[in-house]
Amino acid sequence: MAATEPIRDKKQLKALGDYFLKRGQLRNYTIVVMGACTVLRISDLLRLKWSDVYNEGRGVFYSHITVREKKTGKQKTIKLSKAALGALTQLFPHRRGEFIFANNRKDAKAIGRVQAWRIIHEAVVTLKITGKIACHSLRKTWGYHACRGGAVPPAVIMHIYNHSSFEVTKRYLGITQDDMDLALCSVELF
Image (cartoon, rainbow, N blue to C red; front, side, top):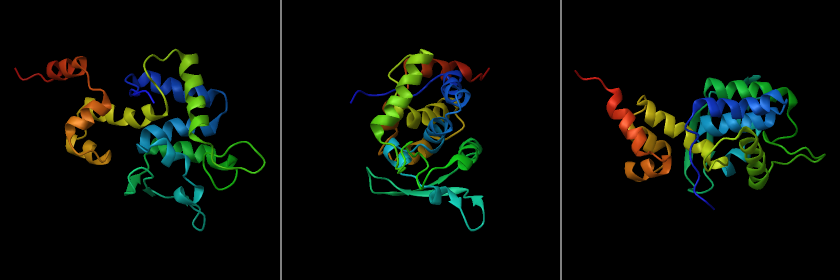
């Protein structure tokens, strides 16, 4: 599998979400939003059930979700952002079965990684978004913008991704010389 890149331009990320929203494809829109906002790998994202995010008894969405990562086996608690909750709220009235990202068949099951890739790939090609963009790009996108914006300490980003060092995180996020140049020039000291 080729290494993917984060979506570096927030306008392109918004265009990717809007691509699905304008077509009434709320499930696919929610994949984009949840993928970028929860930093979950696509395999973990697609396994999410409505019971993981919604308290049926109280009729409310949870503020946090707890996931056992398939790859690492580690348990992770994730705060659902305003954008993630908004996407889930839009999709909720149209839910099909127990999985959030259900297929369109009569016996609704979660879509697979290949189908999720096809969904994202088609939109990326149509929108002419450049770079190696795929499902894993959604996971990388949050970290890229958190790191570049400087609002989130590097140690927190590293911890969110379960990386052993910040060097690994920098490679993972595709921090380029241009990003470092911009950062150095953006801090006015004199």
